[in-house]
Image (cartoon, rainbow, N blue to C red; front, side, top):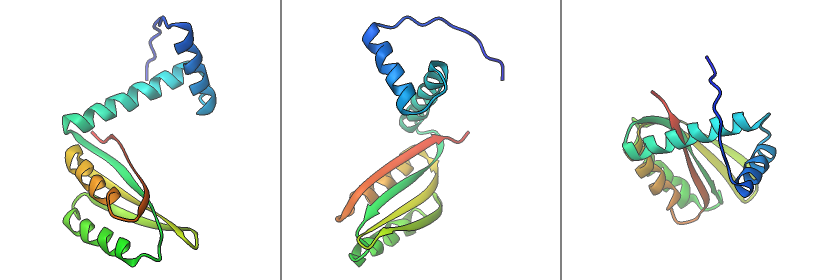
Length: 133
């Protein structure tokens, strides 16, 4: 891919925040961080624009609460065309992490993740999407 050079003017505090972002995320330079942020922004716009995307829903929950797993299964049945795969990881006795790979129209995936994350007893949940076109 051809790379083009551009000049960017930033206020000092914004530049310091960019440098901190580069450091925390282990980017090799500012350009790599800026490319990442632009791609992330474009992907998030696609969520709002209702384009075709792929991603994952990550859920953290107590495995002893069987109703959580049952509810996840019920919701998944209604979104079987969008769900590619699901993987459960045992973090410890009281915490399981489930990662559900998804693809489809952004609004439908957002709807799916909202339903999963809002299940009573889910300790933490996150939707991640990226361009799939």
